[in-house]
Amino acid sequence: MFENLLPTEEIRQKIINKITDEFDFIKTEKIGESVCGRNIDLISIGNSENAAIWVGAHHGLEWITTLLLFEFFYDICKNVKFNENIHGIDVKSKIEKRGLVILPCLNPDGVEIAINGFKSVPKDELPIKNIDDELSKKWQSNANGVDLNHNYNAGWEALHKLERQNKILSPRHTRYGGNAPESEPETKALTDFCRKNNFEYALAFHSQGEEIYWNYGERTPENSEKFAEIFALMGGYKVSKPEGLAVGGGFKDWFIEEFGKPAFTIEVGLGENPLPIEEFPKIYNKIKTALYFCALV
Ligand SMILES: [Zn+2]
Image 1: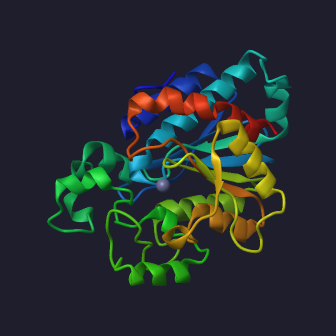
Image 2 (image 1 turned 30 degrees about the horizontal axis):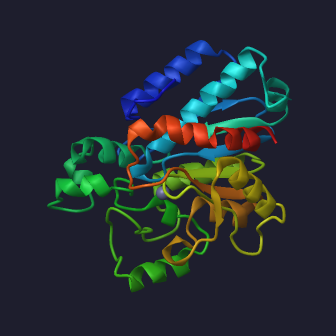
């Protein structure tokens, strides 16, 4: 439905409007704003007391995950509207038991920079002076030059130390975790929202490697590994363990540590970021059954 649409701020709003017009049983909510005042929106369906949360685009270059979440949400809405069964499962009754909350784009400024360059951000907002426009093509951080997936309060100190050892000392396009955990409005909006809701599990979508990560420390639930194995089998993905600068500081890590509930990082697609938009149908079709498994299990 949404292939070939680069998910800029304007396009995301159009998609949300279309979904809202077509399905009167969904809810939309703005949970916060980015550094430059762009909306952090979510869309949800089903039982809000007992829901899963899926988050896309922590990273600017990984905007294909925004599209993927919109596409899947649209498919689920169609299933509910037309009372369709998927793999023998009645989607409507499942979603009425456990809802689905989709946050398609956590890093709206980063996505805008990655798609449209630094003109998307007021010059005085940028943390780096005399910036080379070529750098926008590598931009993963938010508009403060903080990598949101290094900014969560889970092993943040250790990660910060490792960043410094790797000469990552100040705001930049990737892998700088900020000067304190949850220093960024985007990270804070998501953690506050999660604390106010009782989510059953969380998925964070990134775009590199066709992998799923499931563990972080002692509070990782016992059934997480099994869940990851089934997901991997269904999607033709591999189950992985993070290493080095990928350990700690991330949303999945924080969710596991804070709530003791399952959380996963899913890396869709293979190649170089940004994954070309032409590959979207292939990426979506490969992972679709595994996503249904997550939503309906
Ligand atoms: Zn990422």
